[in-house]
Amino acid sequence: MTRNRTTATRAWRNWAGTVAARPARVVSPASVEELTGIVRRAAAEGLRVKAVGTGHSFTAAAATDGVLIRPDLLTGIRETDRAAGTVTVAAGTPLKRLNTALAREGLSLTNMGDIMEQTVAGATSTGTHGTGRDSASIAAQIRALELVTADGSLLRCSAEENPEVFAAARIGLGALGVVTALTLAVEPVFLLTAREEPMTFDRVTAEFDQHVAENEHFEFYWFPHTGNCNTKRNNRSAGHAAPPGRLSGWIDDELLSNGAFQMACSLGRAVPATIPALAKISSRALSARTYTDIPYKVFTSPRRVRFVEMEYALPREAAIGALREVKAMIERSPLRVSFPVEIRTAPADDIALSTASGRESAYIAVHLYRGTPYRSYFTAVERIMTAHGGRPHWGKIHTRDAAYLSGVYPRFGEFTAVRDRLDPDRLFGNDYLRRVLGD
Image (tube, rainbow, N blue to C red; front, side, top):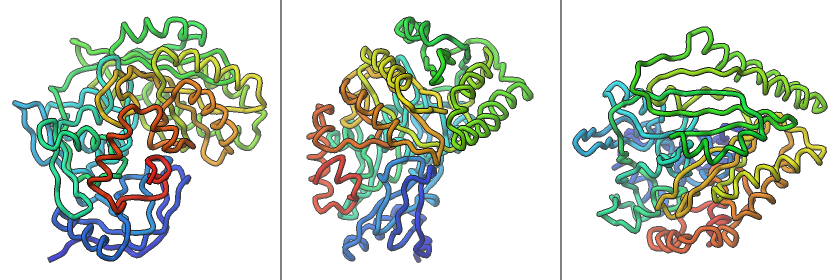
């Protein structure tokens, strides 16, 4: 008996409101067996298939006019193997549920991004990452995965089983099939001490390599129209948990970082001339603080102010020069930028389409408040990023195509060859994938 839910056709929109699609039908399979049947039926009907998570990508990676698969019934931890240091989790599990479930078991991921609203498969398929000197993206922590391919079969892959698919599918963009489960490396839960500190732009850029070398996780935010930055250093601690006080944590994380920032962004969108003055206030609002807690409570933060974002990965040695170019561009332009610019790092990894594939990387992310015209700003930033061989984040706004991307990814042809073998008829294709992967 089938238990999957098929909902009435209606427009699907992503979190930021940048993408809308009207699929022929929306289905929530309750088992892998039902999912394989849905894929076979769609293929027989000539409908394309896309799986969607929580819609946190800014691109149209998950958009389709065919069958949209929601994985909200494919959730939960399937197996925990403490001896191997792994956990196998269903693809539709939200990261926030995974993190809390792991913590209850005394386990943790080694590294993660700064939000945890996404599904596990959605986050890994687009290359979601945090910052780390030695530890890389969530996808780099995958030890095995399974996916339903275009012929409706279930394919399991790892470094030992179907290794050529594994090398591609950890960041698969939804182009190789529908991921149903992931096996992730985990470790006993540990404590991180976070040290947040204001710092001038000139100082943090001059000392960037030193901060990266001395800290397990280093990142900073520069506030355009100012010379001010906020830095964050996360390092493992052998001490005791000392989370932010309830009141002080609420003031920093909710009142200032969300409530007051939301009002400042709204005012800036309505009256752009106020943005430089507001930036000076915002850049001085957060004071230095130090706290210690379990990883997901340190790595992640609530992000309630909606925005649009572009992010590029550069060779790490090029990042500070590129950031200075962005600063100079903003200062000589009429642009008014209300959101800080974010800089993070990642070690090289071995995933074909990882933004850190084969090279130590630094990320420069630019944002604007949702509803603000962004094309002029993003186009100017993208011009700088591509001049340095930048690789755009797969889930964030960019204009690059397969001709460009094949030149900055040495293993691009390896990925497209796996795609040609697994999905020759492009059952899992859409307009975004045609642009970035070619046809």
